[in-house]
Length: 106
Image 1 (cartoon, helix red, strand yellow):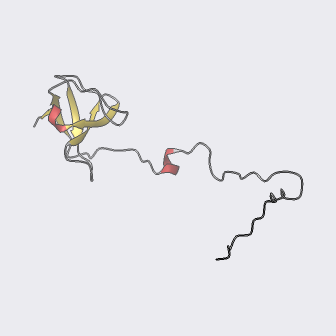
Image 2 (tube, one colour):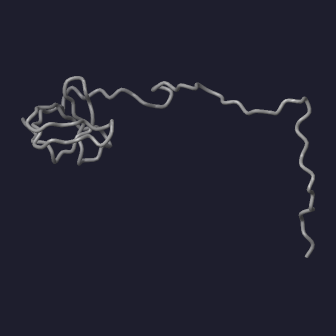
Image 3 (cartoon, helix red, strand yellow):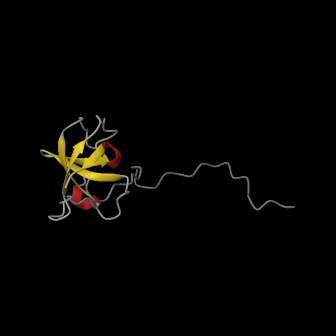
């Protein structure tokens, strides 16, 4: 069968004008949280509860909150969040906390 490809060994010539064409990036180089779709999480005014931490917990990443046994924190749930986790706050720090490490208080 004849080949549809012709054995052209010539390398293509660069575009005329002497300078190579370099693609450029469009948009901000340092995206802001609003440009990437992040929004600040504001806890609901109702639905927050106090919880006592049962065991020390080392945060796996920056989205989680480090916990120490016997401290009191404020917790709340967010829509769409895994039911095994709650959002926790202590002082000015916020992050996900595992429910199994908490005793929810009234």
